[in-house]
Amino acid sequence: MSAARTRRIVSVGLLVAASLVGPATGDSGRIWVHVASPRDGEAVIGEVEIEAEVVARAAVRDVAFFVDGRPVGMVSSAPFRLRIDLGDENRSHEIEVVATDVDGFEARHRITTRRLEMGTEYEVDLRQLYVTVTEGDASIPGLRREDFTVLDDGEPQHLVTFAAGNVPFTAALLIDTSESMVGPKLAAARAGALAFIDGMHELDQAAVITFADTVRGVTPFTVDRGFLATGLVGNRGRGGTAVHDAVYVALKLLTVRQGRRVVVLLSDGIDSHSALSGDDLLDHVRRSQAMVYWIRLVGEGDDAGDRGRLASAWRTPTDYSRNLAALEEIVELTGGRVFPVRAPDEIQPVFVEILNELRSQYALGYYPSERRRDGSWHRLKVRVDRPGIDVRTHEGYLDVASP
Image (cartoon, rainbow, N blue to C red; front, side):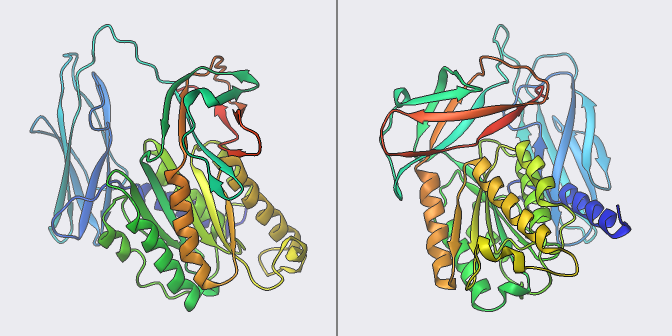
C-alpha cells in the first residue's frame, strides 16, 4: 500500500471519529454536543461506556461527564468516551455531558436511563426491513401485514411488527462539490437538498455532507432547516472526486443512529481520488442496513457503453468501469434507486421524489427463525401477493453476534 493511500485512509478514519454527531445543543451556535451512548431511555446497570459526539467551530478544550449531578470524569481529545461503573442498584440515572471549546463556549446534553424491568425478556435480534412497493412509477398504498411474505434464506418468517406511511428516518445528504459541479449544477443541488429538508417531519433528521477529493463539511443530524442550510453554503465546486470515501463516511455516521437510515448521494459517481475501491465500499455496505439512493448526473453520451473512454492519472478505464458498476450494485443491494439526471433543473424534483418514496415505504419486523452468528450472508426476499408490482428492500444481511 502506498504512503499516500495510507494517509488518506487514516484521514477518513479521523474524520469519522470527529464527526459522529447527533441533535445540536448549545445556545452559542459555535459548539454542539450529543450523548450518543447510552441512548435516552435505555435500560443500563453496572459498567457502562458514555460516549459524546461533538462538533465545534473552534478546537474542543474538554468534555466533562456527569452522572446524577456528580462529576465523574473529563476527556480532552477525541474520541470523547468514558467508562464508569453505575453500580449494582437497579435504578434510573441522569447522564449529562458538557463540551467546552478553547474560546470558552460550551454546550450540554442530558439523557435519562431507566431501570431494568425484572422478569422481562429482552429481544435484541429484531430485523427491520423497509420495503418499497410500486407499480410502474407509482407507489402502492394501503397494503396490509398479511399481503407480505418475508423469506430469510428461503424460509418464511413471522412478522411481529408492521407499519405503513410516515415512519421516521435519518438521512445523510451527500453532495458532490467537486470541479465538475461548478455553476448551475451546484446551485440546483443546494435547492434540491433544501426541498428535501423542507419536506421532513418533526421526527425525521438529516445531516448535510459535502465532499470533493475529501469530505469538506459535515453538519450534525437535526431537523433544523436553518442549520442544515449552513452546510450547503461556501462550496465553490473545485477539486477531484472521492465518492467511495464520502459514502463510507456517511455510512459510519449512520451506524450509531436508530431506525430507518438513508444515504442520498448526488454525484456523477466518477471517482478519481478515493482510497477505497468500489469493491471495498461494497463490503462495508453489506455490514450496514442503510438504504442508498443515487442521483446520478450524466452528460451527453454518458452511459454504460462509454465507460471505457474514462481514464486519468489515478484510474484506468477498467477501474472506472468497475467502480461505477460497484456503485450501481450498492444501490440495488440496499433497496435504493439510481435516478439519472441530465440537466440541473431535474435535480430538485428527484430529491422530492425520493422523499415521497420514503413516505410510502412499509416497515416490516421479524425475529429470524435461524441465527448462526458466524458472519454468513442471509439473502432476503419480500413478496407481495399482487401481480404486476415491483418490491424493493435490502437484499440481505451479515449474520453476526449482537453487540
